[in-house]
Image 1 (cartoon, rainbow, N blue to C red):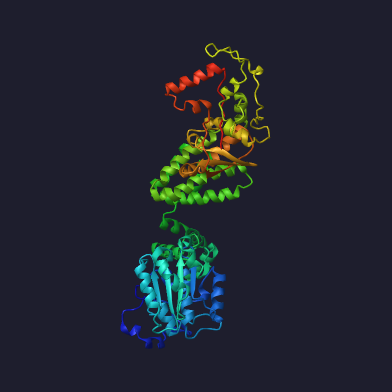
Image 2: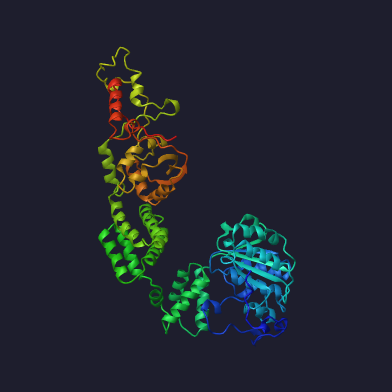
Length: 573
C-alpha cells in the first residue's frame, strides 16, 4: 500500500514531533499559509466548520464523546460534499491529545497538526482508483496487524473505495469485519452501487447530501471577506448554483473568478470566466422553441456559437431555464407538455450529447422538431377533431386470441353456403347479411369518453399511420399493453432497449397524437416485456413482403375463394 502522506524529513516522523505544537493565534492553530488552491486553504478542520451535514456531525461527535466508535465507517455522497474532510476531522478527534468536551478536536496539539499537514504515520489515505488490486489489499492487511507508531489509533481513509477490484474487496472483507482494536477504517465513495453489500453491512453508513445554494453562498461570502475582496450577492449566488451542491466546485470557480477580475466580483465576471451565455440569450432561445420558430431558434444558436460560447454549457443553461419554466407552468397542461418535450431534448444535449460532441446537432434538431410539433395533430384541438370526423370511424374487427387466431376472411368462409363452388366463387354477399361479432364502440376525438385498451389495440395501425416521420418507426415497434385511466403503457419486446429510450424522448409528441385521435389528455410509459409483436394488418401477416409474388397470389386466392375482405386486427399477447 502507499506510504502515508507526510513530509520528507526524518524529524517529522519522530514521535517527539507530536509534543511540539505549531504557532497559534488565540490558542488555535493558524490556517495553512496563504498559497495553493482556495479549496485546500479553506478545507474544514473541525466539526463546527462543516456545513450542511448536521445529522452526520452530531452522530460522530456523540460517538467520540461517549467512546462508542465503530471499527469501520462508510461515507457516501456526491463530490465536494465533505466526505474526505469529515474523515480527516474524525481521525483528529480519535487521536486528539486535548479534545474538548463537545467532541471537537483541538486542531492545535501535535497529533492534530500532524494529521492536518499530512505527515502522521498512522493516518493513511489510500486512493482506491490507483491502488485497487488484490496485492494492494493484501499489503494493507499485513500493515494493519502492526501497532500504531505514534498515535492512539491507526486510521485508514480509503477514497473512491468502489474502484477496488472484486478480489481486493474479498481480501479486505474479514479485516473490515473484525479489525484489530487499534485500527479504524473510513471508506468514502461517490457510487454506492458498486460497493458490495457484504462491505456495506459491516460498516456504519453515512449519506452526505448536496449542499443548499444559500449555505454555499454564505461560506463563499466569508471566504471573499477574509481574502479582502468584494463580491455582489448575485455573483456568489450564481457560483453556488453552478456548483450544483458541491462546496469544492464552488470554491474552485470562485478561485478562478478572483484570478480573472482584480476588482469587485460581479455576476457578469462570473459568466465571462466560466463561459456562460447571457440569461437574456438563453431566454430568447427557449422562447423560440416554444413559438416553433425554426429560423429564429437556429439564428439564436448561431449567435451563441459565434460569441464563443460552449454549446454543451448553453444546453445545460437552457435545461435549467426550461426546468424552472416547467415547474412554474404546472397549471397550464398544454404549455407544460410542450416544455417537457423541449426539456427532454435539452437534457440529452447537455448529457450524452455533450459527451459525444453532438450537443449543437441536438439543439438544431430541436429547432425543427419544435416547429413540427405545432403541425402535429393535437396542436390545434379543433382542427384535429375536424380531421378525425372527416376521415370517419374505423371499421375494425375484434381481435382473435389463442387457437382462434384465424384471418377474418377465413372465419367468414365458414358461414358461406355449402354449395358455393371453389372453382367458381359466388358474388360477395352484402355486408348487412353477413353475420359479424359485435365490435367495440369507437371513441372519436373530443366526445369526452376514453377508449378501452381493446380499441387502442385495434386502432393502433391508424395511430402508426398518422404519426410523423420521426415517431412512426418507433410506434411500429411497440403495442398498447395496459391502460390505467389516462396512463397508457406501451410494451416493447425485450432486447430493444434503444427503441424504448428513443420513444420515451418523444413522449410529448405521441401524447399529442393520441389526444388528436381519441380525445382527452394522455400520458405514456414504456416498458420492456416478453410481448410478441403481431402484424398491424392481415396483409402484413399473410404476405409481409410486398415484393413476394407467391405470398400476394396466395392472399388474393384466399380472398377470391372465401369472398372475405381484409380487416386490420392488431393484437398483443
